[in-house]
Length: 495
Ligand SMILES: *[C@@H]1O[C@H](CO)[C@@H](O)[C@H](O)[C@H]1NC(C)=O
Ligand SMILES: *[C@@H]1O[C@H](CO)[C@@H](O)[C@H](O)[C@H]1NC(C)=O
Ligand SMILES: *[C@@H]1O[C@H](CO)[C@@H](O)[C@H](O)[C@H]1NC(C)=O
Image (tube, rainbow, N blue to C red; front, side):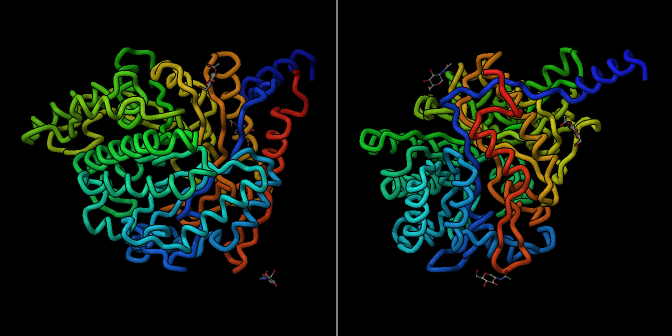
């Protein structure tokens, strides 16, 4: 081959596979990994734990889950948490993000009945983490509502749920807050509200798209704010921790440079992300104006008495805005967005309210999850957008990761982490965005909701056919361990 051809090939290869940046993450940057209670714990009815909506949903509608799987045993972390902590210690991570199972602590959902065995379990987990120098990052709600509360209407029942969540949050702060300094109230509430009460594919399976899904969000946002104020007023002075709410989004890239596609992409991210992020994180508070206007207009045309999107009073807007100590962001992928004329009236739904067309570019690398394509540059654009839109907050990436079939030689996951982290580092060093932490989803393969055990996100493999649920490190665990230890994404960094 002549040298020019070789050079051309090298350049082409280089732009097709951009190299990770060779500089180090800042000294104070924090690396962690995450799981969630229903996805890993098992022990679904042990030692006084109550039933939650995922227990009920997977037992009542097994056909809705791949291979009729459920979280009855999952990774059995209820019994094997010490093994999990050995893994975390080996990875060398600074923190472990996990969630509390509300019904393990409060079997009926309210503080009238506390399950001491559940409290002890989390005290043991937290103590073992601290003894190993790992900071607990605790999520109060990662989708597993106590079933008795669903039977009273669940999240769309605003009056009931705001107070019950606040009671649960206060109890958690008082029980665990001497050791836990980083709290997340809700994880990705959009999945709870839109998938659980809109499309009805997640527990509790309620189909009320663009009606109950909006009420659910309204409740969650108010409940978060109330929990934040409780922390502020009753715990912050003595516990000196931080409270946040995790909001998730894909990046939305306009399909073309046209004004219409750019407007469509902005509208999509406002509905998808601003819906939850604006009331809390935006200096003006409240839902995005485009969402208020469009839902009101369509509701009226559809014959509703008032907008399907509930309203915050001016007092509520003030009470909710600013209820965060850092920005918790989950992100995995990107979508292209094209302008569309308004979807027909009568099609009452969140999607009709947005009225845009999204798709993923067929050239993007795939994962084992249909929605998850590998688009590392999208994350750099997203964190820049968050930085600009929300007035330069401190951002912690509270989830990011890749699914495959669970193989130990998981090159796809290594490439994913390397490229996403590289884009995040470029956003920090070149764009001046204040990202201070990163969380790899997930510590180990686990119950992936409707996907059951068919979409594996772990740094550790779990053998779900073995009653011991044996854990084995994948190649990516070695990769991540090295990144955490060296703060460098390649063999040798320049600084
Ligand atoms: C796509 O996958 C190939 C093969 O694993 C990999 O070499 C390449 O870097 C990936 N591209 C992106 C953008 O992740
Ligand atoms: C990032 O946020 C932290 C916490 O608020 C702050 O101490 C730090 O100065 C910020 N850094 C930059 C570069 O803005
Ligand atoms: C499970 O673990 C126990 C105790 O370590 C061991 O004796 C047993 O052989 C293991 N079972 C399997 C199937 O690996």
